[in-house]
Length: 289
Ligand code: GLN
Image (tube, rainbow, N blue to C red; front, side, top):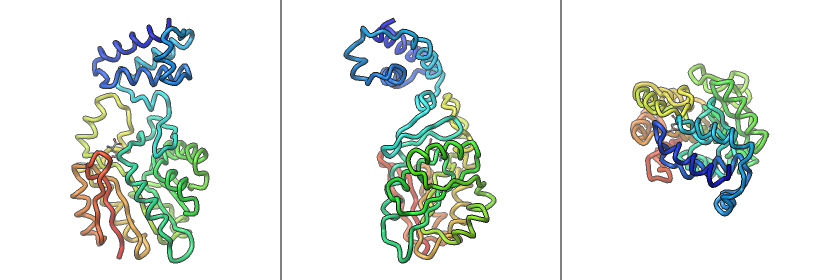
């Protein structure tokens, strides 16, 4: 079978799926490129090239995609902040929405501190994308990251190896403390705490997952109004930030204002809601004055 023939069949498979992909052509090209190693331009310029033995894995990937599995879980990789991250269904797929948080964190991390290196903690790190992108761009700061899931921390370790080996990763359930006791001893106060915690209201998280995206519910479900973990994080972070330190939390466009109100109530000052690239309220910043 030629690339051109495979492309046609794949696109029509994706169009006629129970949940048709909104980007059937692009999905097909990305997967063809992934399996053949040819850039997309070559696939378009040479539809007569043979797919050969790759036809089986390619169509099996198209079937997975037609059941709703995101491309990133099929290829096992996703670009975030111009770095390539390994992803599996043990971790959320890094989203462009989160890049604004990284950008702001990098700005804060580059602001010269009063003494010594800046200490940054990323809570609920998942694939490690936030911590790793910050450390990659600001090598002189000291970055630690935690997640409740051991499987996620394993993925984050692989990603850290690739882009920022000095990031230190820890398994920790936020509900039992911001970081493991030994780390709290080592770094009693943080300059900056960042997080993309689970913040989707439970019923919405369940509905989202019905499309077969297979993302971990643990990383999405933030309780009835989505604010359970944001509140715990805000309270604990306040106690663990140095004076003048900052907290950056991602939230939903639907609960960002409520999250900001909570931060205010928890004692933070200079609260700002940053918008993402789609102009949606996305990241709450607060500082400990
Ligand atoms: N909308 C976000 C996503 O799909 C939700 C992430 C979260 O709950 N932290 O990645």
